[in-house]
Length: 108
Ligand SMILES: [Zn+2]
Image (cartoon, rainbow, N blue to C red; front, side, top):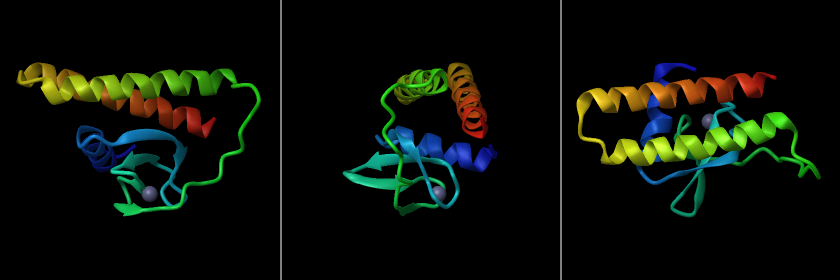
């Protein structure tokens, strides 16, 4: 994932957006719920979520994805409160790693 994309996603997380388990139909990035709207931080617009079929049983990859999303939200919360520059960079690094894994999961 490009740094620009990661920066926009991080910005959205910090702004109080909540990462959803659906992806943008245009850029395939994760969609966010922000102020009651579904938005794509990368395309910067309200967008239609891709229709996701509800599956009766979560596959292992989906379980991992859900855990990673929880982590990501928690890192974002920590990042918001963090004032130490070094720790801020560490957190950004972790966020980047999680986003990279999520990207890989999507590729299958
Ligand atoms: Zn998009």
